[in-house]
Image (cartoon, rainbow, N blue to C red; front, side, top):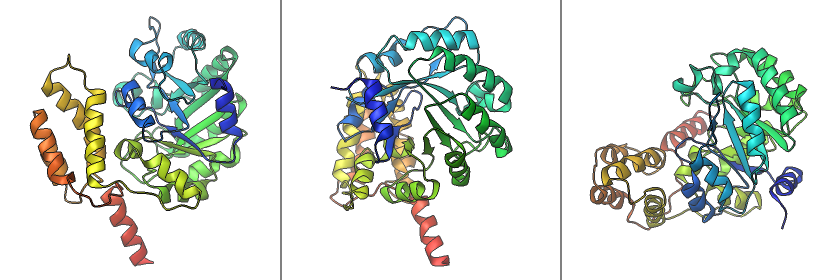
Length: 348
């Protein structure tokens, strides 16, 4: 069996689009990886980010995703921080574990992160990024990757960032086609991803609003990206990776029925909720996942309205059953996307 480095190298060399599960803090953890793998899963899994600073240690729950990797697929360890010495130390520590690559997060839009000039906050300081990437490229003997947004409050800086990325011999660049300030609110600027694909000597993954096999195909066609990184779309629809693969083979994607989605939510509850945690805390944790699932369940918002108000497991599943105990196929695409596409086609 190929090791993680060879698996990842083979995936990068393959003609098929590379499909990666995006890292989402406190969401895409080890239990979630295990569950996703049962639905087909991604080709590559990125860890939640390791917080790196002068006195940091590798966080055990995130490290478990690497040491107990249940996916059978390559794992890329992601770091976030701005202290060069600490980042180099952490990168060397991570390379003692079975990972395919080390990734630097330059895209996290959370204010608690960017105010510390980490994640997306670093996009305001291209020279600092240059220094960090230079030090990390020297320290990382395996593949070295970066996940970025197209700027902090303006994409104008992207023209300055791309030559810096190219200079440091990255093995893969993932581009989320929004600025940090745009969070997840705006349309994705796929033209900037296209530009990155044209400008970079390494493969580029497109990230942002991949919500169906058709949208995946459209993004790949437009950007010519080497593959896709999918986060919210995969949480809402764990069948999405297999649907994309089927579509690429020329097969019609199979949509889950309502009861299949209900079974997924039950499995998700069992996977991510530990018995030592109070029922109310478990329900609160599930609401984080259901915020993604809910926008594909029904168009009025009632499902999410009701879910956000429950406090017990019984009420949580009562609301889920009211909406999902049926045998109708569910595309699980966000209804706002469907309305937008309908309006576009009518306008055309």
